Image 1 (cartoon, rainbow, N blue to C red):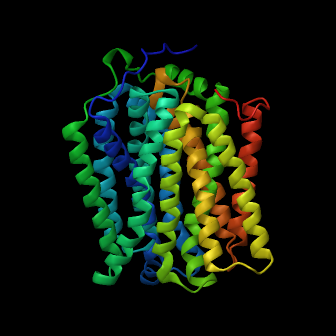
Image 2: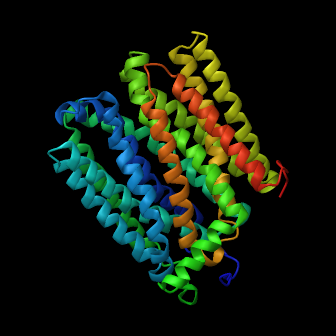
Image 3: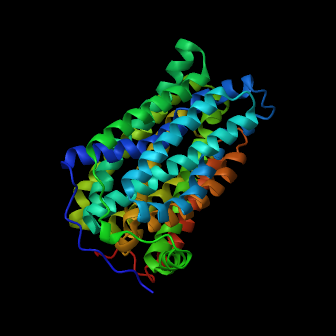
Length: 409
């Protein structure tokens, strides 16, 4: 049974510039919860007596796991009670979980708090994507998401610097969690003040098991929803592999941990440029041509990076350049994949966002864990992870499009 489709979206309920800035701020809270931790992982490991260096990565993995799994349950709530209430509650819990992480006295308790924070902000992610889908669709949604992603990329530039700054001034990794909680509450205040409910009362869906099951089934049996969700999950896996291992790469492989923020800034900067380019071109060129081309580019760059490392010719400069180019391709492909996956989901945007988010993030976290745990003191596992993830994503897209890539639609 197919849910009734709502009227065509007509635009944001607030000014476009403020809408994009607010959506970007909401989505950036997830990245802030991950990236601000990266410089603090060694300090956390030392303070909480984590024996194996690779186990420090679980601070990231626990957050991502909670974030991925919880999305499956947030969508029906957003479709029943609305995006606004859902997001307000999620951000309050997110702030509280970060305070709990700051107070944790053992590594186990820290991981529990991190998983809770990820589960809470998952509700924010589901509601935020549903808000965008309530207001826009098709190429217009892809354009909004691209501009949002461009603004959002400021966070990966600033978050590691924030973490390093707190460690340098106060020598306390715990304070980083307190700062994240404060920022979350500030964004919550802005959202509560300015953003009205975007789910029309007549489009609210009941919380009945049969309705939820039908909605889940509709999401996973729609070819575009399933295919582009899985493809996005492969790309997210490469990203999480990078986040899991980049701190060790900078410290152990290149011996320059102090340049972590610089490498992050270069990568995020080029991703922002790529997102701006995508926003300018997507209405004319189309989501498929742009995303499929970026996916092929990501595959070729991953192969080139692996070959360069195996030849013994890699330097910190080549790593930074190839990483930035690869992540620029990731940004274009992943943004458009998310928009295409939501294309037929207007009647159940909250549930669709949650199921798709669960699928892509859960798959991505598993791939990212494998890449991160394979770290052997070189960049070879990361480069191979990028190439294999892109190859798998390309195969899935090929199936989804029935072999017809680069279509103008």
